[in-house]
Image (cartoon, rainbow, N blue to C red):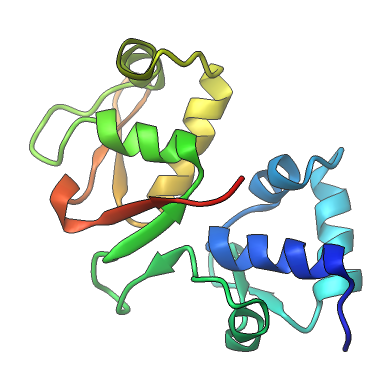
Length: 166
């Protein structure tokens, strides 16, 4: 199957962001809905992706070779990832989020830290999405109190965080 330039770029996004969800690809690709993402994946990239046991989108090994992009997570199964490649906001969240031995914090708390540390002003949904994406990459854990709260699942220096091209 020959891929168009757009399909090759979008496949590179799947490889880079995996494990990922429709919403994350929707944001990256600038499309209107998760349904549009699903249709594109099925119609254009069906041979190159699959959904894991948690329904997260992952690229096949062939896809990674085809686009010559490093996967979003480099790890041995069941072990903390050595490297994660994430968008800038996720990198910033990783940097300010409470450590594994600290009290977990709410999305709003993380938002305030981002504003103070980086002089950025993302929305709460963007911060929540970044936290959930980092959670899927096994570097953030959630604790349910009155509201869901988050903290790193690993020591900051155990993982190299690389900012992926937007």
